[in-house]
Image 1 (cartoon, rainbow, N blue to C red):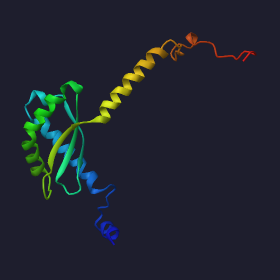
Image 2 (image 1 turned 60 degrees about the vertical axis):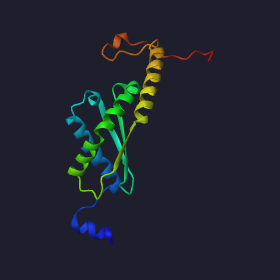
Image 3 (image 1 turned 120 degrees about the vertical axis):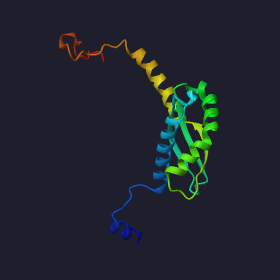
Image 4 (image 1 turned 90 degrees about the vertical axis):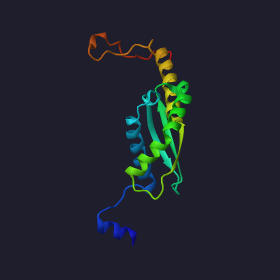
Length: 150
């Protein structure tokens, strides 16, 4: 029944309300953080938001170019800006209630950085292996030919 009603209105949705709400809050918070004149928030990016189903709480994941060293400073600045951020959400969205905001560094970004560092380390070891030069075919090493001993 609901699907028919949505089809008639032409507003079929491809993903659930919670995902749309998470995206909307991420955009509102990111825009508002750009407007706040606080040097501690200049290198900060809102990576995602997770809103609880009852809209009472939202967990805001962020990352900073300062990395783990800048987390305490960023959390302090975000705590000071919490009221302004909540009022921006209230102004720009039509929510029944504005969720309480909690901030946490994004673990996915941190883990990704660790993996990149490991891959870079492995890449430095693999640099000893000659790589064919696509621009200069003459510099390409000869093809591998197996020996009879193998």
